[in-house]
Image (tube, one colour):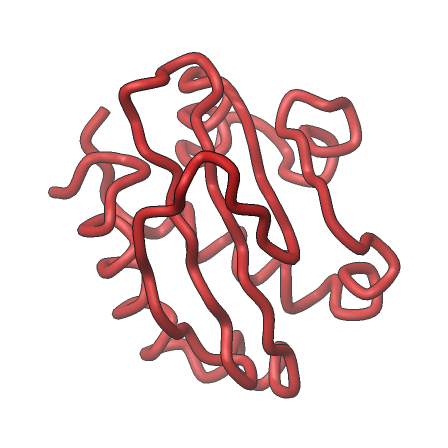
Length: 128
């Protein structure tokens, strides 16, 4: 079981995603880079994760100054609550407990696909 916010964890997410035809269909045409950061654990290197035409792409450690198309930032505890299904993802982002920086209008156009992606995040068994 991989630890949250590691390359290994995102490799596991990639496997789940490649098995999910619905996610790929909903995100078809989307090519973007996401970054994921844990703001209260400076020893955890941010992760960059690309999406290429609706499918998972490259996963890598991101330099601290790197800015993707969509940047997700939260405390360890808020990530844990999200991934364990304890909180609603949209409400968590809207309330600022998970900060999202990026072009929100384009994200809203593909909201069903991004919500599907969030459900895939919750499907990965995670070591905390």
